[in-house]
Length: 146
Image (tube, rainbow, N blue to C red; front, side):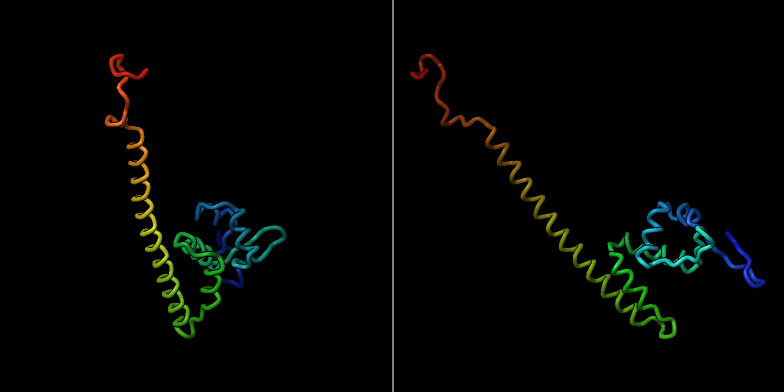
């Protein structure tokens, strides 16, 4: 959606535009707005999203895919400072990425251990279901026990 403002064209987006573009519900977009992450202007009941809102939504969704909470994303957004080259923000982002990777590495190790334990438990169950031929009594009439 494009709207005119003070003689020059400025791109804006409706909630439906963003919902379709990012394949999310309008309810999710309103949730991010309620969390203070998006700040559309209003024309009556209609929300008008700026290119900045669109970029923030894109970053929120990317962060979500990377395992970031909304609070973690907010920390990064609040650190945005183009005058400083965003050095603090980028350093914080790198630290957060390293932390997420370390968590994933630990989860992978935990999963491998769990898989080994599952295979061992499965084998114990299979072994328990096999008849023990050495200790089973002879069931024939000549075997003595009935």
